[in-house]
Each structure stands twice: as structure tokens, then as C-alpha cells.
Image (cartoon, rainbow, N blue to C red):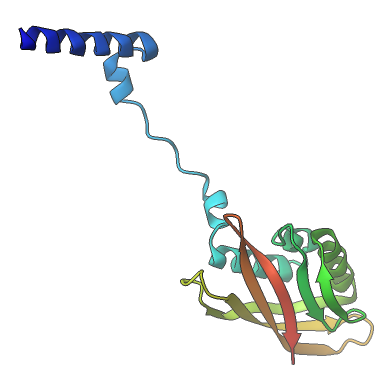
Length: 165
């Protein structure tokens, strides 16, 4: 008596499944959920943020650079133009870099060292070498740029950008 009852229950469950979602074969053959696009996955990795910043800086693209700033303010300490030193919102970062890129042509920008990118519980930062040319004087300057990242929700964003000779 137990086997027919079990068989009846199984048939009822299968019938309910067929009514709810088509054939049992179709449910088994469904494609797995697609992974998020590579662009979305990359923005969550510290190295992708550093590479995005590097590309934006080289291209003198203030908009792309500012997209790496989160909702909280970012600390900037840049000698040019006019010496920025303080906390800025994403829109302020955009305008500061736009002004900087009008006054100085980027000759080179490359991250050369990274710290704790595989240890997100610790302070994650990268060090870049930068060369730029003052449009008015024609002089070329070189310095180091220190970029610190923080995790904002599930997204890595810029926490601070500082320069040193």
C-alpha cells in the first residue's frame, strides 16, 4: 500500500511542475543564469579600478576618472592647478581634473606598484609614476601618484589621490 501512495505523490508533484513551468525536460535543460557582463565584474576588482584610472588619466578623461569616485567624498592632494588639498564629491573631482587636464598635458601615467589588492580587508593602494607638461611654460614635471581604494557596498572606489615628488 505504501508504494502506490508514494507513486501517486510523485506523479502529483510532476504534474504540478508541468502545469507551472512546462515540460520536465524543459526545466532540466534551462540555460544557467548568465554571469554578469565582464565590465560589471571588473568594476568590483581593485586592479580593474586601477587600470580604469590609468586609462582615464592617460586619455585626460575627467569624466571617466570621476566615475571611479563613490558616493562618499574623496581626499585629493594635488599641487596643480591652484593646489587642491581637501575632500571632494564626485562632481567636484570631475571639474578639478577637467581644469587640470586643460592646464597640463599628460606625458605619461602608469601604475608601477600595488599593495594589498589580494587582501581587501587591508588598505588597498597603488603607486603610479606620472609626467606632465605645463602648457604655458613648456616645462615637464614628474612625480608619484598614490591612489587608495575603499570598498563601498560591493564596489571598489577611490578613497584618496595624493602626489609626491
